Amino acid sequence: MLLALKRFWGYDQFLPNQLEAIRANCTGRDALVVLPTGGGKSMCYQLPAVCTGKAVVVSPLISLMQDQVVALRQVGISAAFLNSSLSAEEAGNVMRDWRAGRLKLLYIAPERLVMSGFLGFLESNPPVFFAVDEAHCISQWGHDFRPEYRMLRTVRERFPDTPMCALTATAGEQVRRDVIDQLALHDPAIIIGDFDRPNLHYRVERRSDRNAQVEEVLKAHAGKSGIVYCISRKDTESVASHLTSRGFRAAAYHAGLDHEVRREVQQAFSNEELDAVVATVAFGMGIDRSNVRFVIHAGLPGSIEHYQQETGRAGRDGLPAECVLLYSAADVMMRRRLIENNEDTPDEERAARLFKLNEMARFASTIRCRHQTLVEYFGQTWRKESCGNCDVCSGDMVSSVLPDGNVVVQKILSCVARLKEGYGAGYLISVLRGQTQDVQPVHCGLSTFGLLGEYPLRLLRGWIDECIGQMLLERTTDAYPVLRITAEGWRVMRGEKSAYLSAPVSSSRGRRSEGDGERIRRHKRHAEVDMTPETLTLFEALRLMRAAIAKKKRVPAYVVLHDAALLGIAVKRPHSLEELEQVPGIGEAKLRQYGKMILGVVAQEEE
Ligand code: ADP
Ligand code: ZN
Image (cartoon, rainbow, N blue to C red):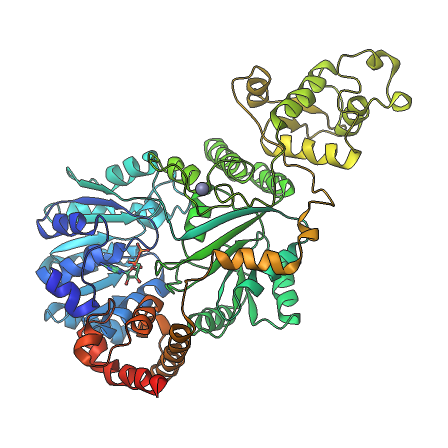
């Protein structure tokens, strides 16, 4: 196994949990592999397929299959895919190759795999095992349910003795159980990786000026690239055009664009011709680039699963990368409304989505280590003291949370209670601020009258929105909407649960007064590898070489060589092919194809 790992991929050792998963696949045991994005899931089935024979890989997206197949062929492994993008003749060729045993891996879309004709074909030319990628798509509890995945059950029925390996990056308890049930995995080896991504620096900022904040992050990562996620299509367009006007190479990407345009944007991003793609969630599944240096959420994701998956696209090469979430309570309300107004969603699913949204909002408004919060959300225990790599632990939170927010929330809620849940936000604020002229005499005697008189109206309005966002209060939807306390809200009142509010942005200490330079340095601190100037020069020269190769071969740059491999070369400065082969990420095929060229670049830099 190690020999193959070195020979094809150029790696000397397995990543955590890979060997366990590989062993299950090689010994014919069913397996459920849950590893975070970037954890090296593909290797768990690719290596066994190379060593033991041939495997069928179920994958949900055409672009994902294509990227994998291109990358495999680059390292000298025969692989192909079957999906709707192929002509009948091309598909016929693939099937002929499979029959003749010329393919180690066959990627296929689920709906195609379950066609009875195809299953019949496979019966006479069976794989050694099946791998089901993105297995969470089978579960309604996941965040990306795909009905066609449900049909995979028939594969199990037709091939009861062929081992099956399900892989996913996001699976809470419920999803895991669902995957095992739906695929009828038999006594599977369950391999759950470490969900922490220590190289990612998480930061949450109060959103005040979206475009300026996004631009700031891009400035700190000059020459590198990343993804900006927005909630709406309109936002993607507006952020992208702002960035373009400021001299960045940026493009919008959303499901409303022409298929062709989307393909071009994706391609340009893969080829490192863009500094940023500004996208809705539609972007990403097919992005295999490992040197994404930042992911910005300009709007709040709908769940922590989404957040983890989207931020997970940063730093897959293991090098430092930054994840910035621009938080505004207004997003929580907007998303809530979207969920509540969607008539087609069954009640149960709606409740699940609201719950997930709430957890996401909580993540954004807590003063707890971000790494710890994420890891615990995915059901793991956090063993470290402090991560040292999030805004909370490194003590440079920009969006501070109000120190006694919980008490303020309790005051707001009890005022709603005293008003017998019969009034709207405007009136509530008048009472809390003690505005005698606007309040009915009967309410001037309430114990909550004037209780928050020291805070300005705007701030109170924002806090009430945050209470709604955290689902402590709800607004009725009739002609005269009034505020009601939710079950969660009552728990906060009883002290069974605590709530958070964001602190006002003070003009003396606020982010605006900090100065551009300092903010950019802060972003940079978490984004850059320490490189000597010589290493950096060589690294840049290697990147140029890689870009030229990628262009010529018409493949994405990361397919040629990963950033981590380039960095390894820049640090080691090899002078012979033997020395070069020691660099992680340089396998036989890469050595043969690019070895001389790399040595040439190193030599040239040293002249
Ligand atoms: P996932 O599908 O889990 O998100 P990938 O399979 O895309 O992750 O792998 C992420 C990165 O890790 C890829 O660049 C891959 O080449 C690299 N990788 C996989 N296995 C190893 C290994 N044993 N050593 C070093 N890098 C590895
Ligand atoms: Zn931390």
